[in-house]
Length: 189
Image 1: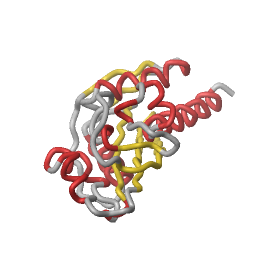
Image 2: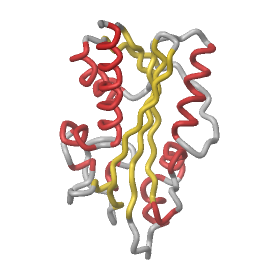
Image 3: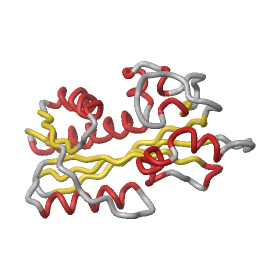
């Protein structure tokens, strides 16, 4: 079976290919775009994009949306993480946290797929804190300021392999792979 990952991020493509290869799935790539709606949850954004892409005739596809949710900021930037990164950047988020004791945060990832006309939605989450300053050169986005729980280093300071084992997207990709494994096993019975 072939699935098409809709993304402009080559790192995501490698991660999906690595996780789904053991299932015998080939992951193709498309940078097809959809209009991201203003929504309260990542799942609403993912479901809207899936619907748009299906209307265009795309089948057997997978997309994801992720966000950084800073607890002291009421969950901001959350579903607006890409916009916040483009406009105020990491430094803007750090300025918003100046003088605050609570630096807790979490990353969330929602993966949505449409396979043979059926939608699959899974989630992944990683708890952590926001560092006082950016550190590290690995990863992308807010990785240099996010310290996952149980670590003293940011996502940008740990290897991609280590990050994939604990990150929100890594957990969501694993949940997606498990969901697909179950469906493939059912189909072969």
